[in-house]
Image 1: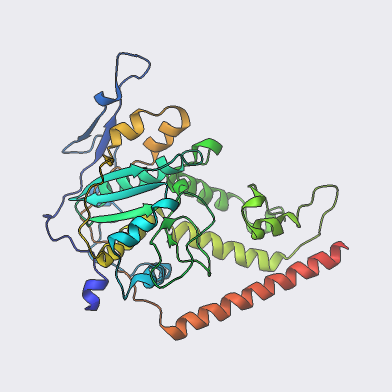
Image 2 (image 1 turned 180 degrees about the horizontal axis):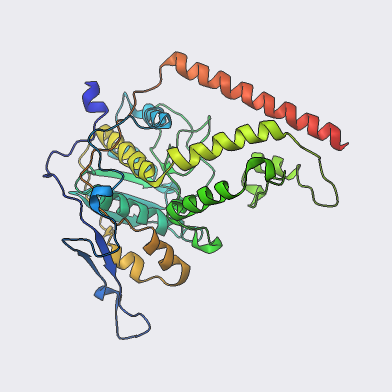
Amino acid sequence: MPSSMVNSIPHPHHPPYQSKPFKLACPNQTSPSLSSNLCRTTTIASPPSPAPSPYNDPLITSSSPSCPSYFRWIHEDLKPWASTGITRDMVERAQSMAAFRLLVIGGRLYVEQYHRVFQTRDLFTLWGFVQLANRFPGRLPDLDLMFNCEDPPTVKNSPSPPPLFRYCKDDTTVDILFPDWSFWGWAEINIKPWKELSEEMKDANKRVKWKKRRPYAYWKGNEGVSRHRQDLMRCNPSHGHDWNARVHNQAQKIGKKGSGFILEEVSMDYVYQYMLHLLTEYAKLLRYKPSLPEKATELFLESMACDQGGKVREFLMESMVSWASNAEPCTLPPPYGAEELEELRSKKNAAIKEVEKWEKEAWDKGH
């Protein structure tokens, strides 16, 4: 297949779109006589003040630069099906592990849900798909996929593994990595949508210089999810014990690089572009024409947001795409070569050994 076809995102049946603002209006839900069916989505010809001008849209550029290097992992994630393609049977074999099945047919999104998931992970993930469709109208190809909303990856490599999208993977599994729900907000623990949260983090980084920060790391979560999280608990300074792990220079270097990467190269613009490239490359592998399952329902902004309340609706509204764009996304870089992958593995192993050395030194000091 020519590289120009592999690295581009086609839009064969759609004329160019002009950037237009989206506005979602929900009725006053305090009145029991009003149904969510009265919600409406409107597109207006000119932006009301103080909405930003479409000409300042960060995706509207005269040329498309290369995507960040981590986009290259899209090729690796889809490599198990590169030679065989993806059949309907493969997709349906993933159903037993999936929370929902998502289809795009003619630019419209449909979902078939199989079971309840933890908190609102499925709602915010599906919301992300709808925002992507609005961000790049007419650009999503027809596709059919299964999605799991749990953390631990489960699909082992085999001659024809079932393709299953989820938030996590590791070196022993072939689950297809996808941005997690919290990019659009995590209402249950009041984590704001990433666009707003990242701006707050940038402001906080400017206010407090590295050398003036307290030399502590803070983590909160369920340590039972993985062994690596359990390792974190060994550094817990509770019970009156402080492991005295002070690696100021290393911490500054790691922190600055990590902050720069997450704030600049994982912006919401890049999140949407990653999603678009991933789904486009995935759709190229399908060896059948997607068709609607009997129990599939169409996804609409109105029914998804207007039926919600509290922080859930607040975060859905805050994370809603404001503008459709006719700009080209960044250019998908080529796959890694064998030598590049080996070099990455060597660097990863060296980094792990260095961190383990720091851990041992801190442990020895603590005893």
